[in-house]
Image (cartoon, rainbow, N blue to C red):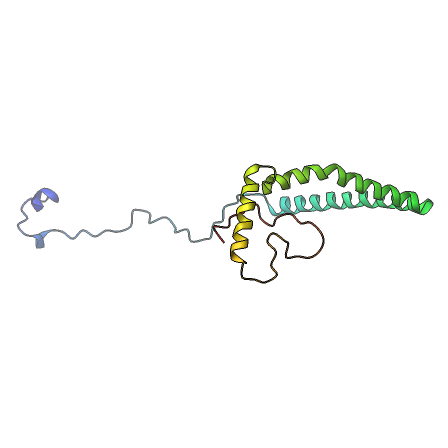
Amino acid sequence: MTESLVRKKPGMASVREMPVLQDGPPPGGFPPVRYARRIPSNGPSAAAIFLTAFGAFAWGMYQVGKGNKIRRYALLLYISSPSSYLGALKEEKIAARCAILPILQAEEDERHGTISFPYVKEWKKYLEEEARIMKDVPGWKVGESVYHSGRWTPPATGELRPDVW
């Protein structure tokens, strides 16, 4: 396209004859530049956070106070008849442990796999591997615990994998 068609000025032969067009601001000027920091107000206010924390603290203190009242009442029972209070407390603790013991033992057996038959096979493989590794150690007894506490302890791991050792 020629300059005459672009600028709609007839008779121009050269670019030098074209009027100078320079970009400038729009009429009325540019809008002001916003440079201030604008932080969105999302989330709870400081007052709401403070009141929630205070409420949680107050509820906790209320629970502590209730426990102190129960303990104070128990102390009065203890003062009136120490043997019956301590006996009742001990009996309650033993009864709670006896009630939950089968559940805990079942979970432990399931975790170690002591109920299933494959565990026995794995244990035999483990003992054979131990015998092979420790054959040159004098006085070593295969399958005996290295801890001489006199108490039975369950296996330390749920999986017996001699191939990994």
